[in-house]
Length: 109
Image (cartoon, rainbow, N blue to C red; front, top):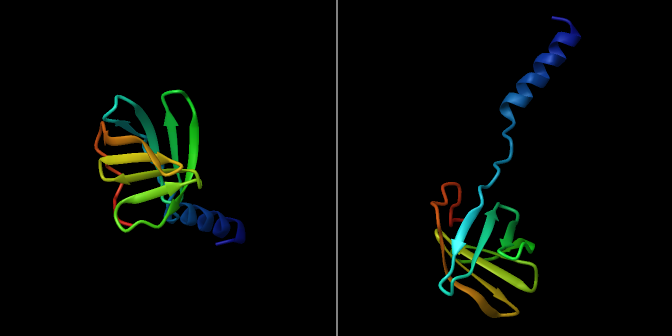
């Protein structure tokens, strides 16, 4: 086998065995006071989009239960199908429930 064929085979093999990053499906949350938001939860970040169109990108922070994401001002807590958001230590979206099953979200770290 010549070098060109071998390198083509190697590239094809690497592409086949290197997993592509999973794209998280957005979760729609409906909260007790009538508000709602969308959250796209990934391992290294969460993107939250509010009904106003405002979008925030939050980074993971330590959590004993569920997952927490923050930008230093806003905190998103998600545990299975439940969530809440606080801003400056005040809960602004409480008792929020996902409107669909979080098939690709695990509460384990």
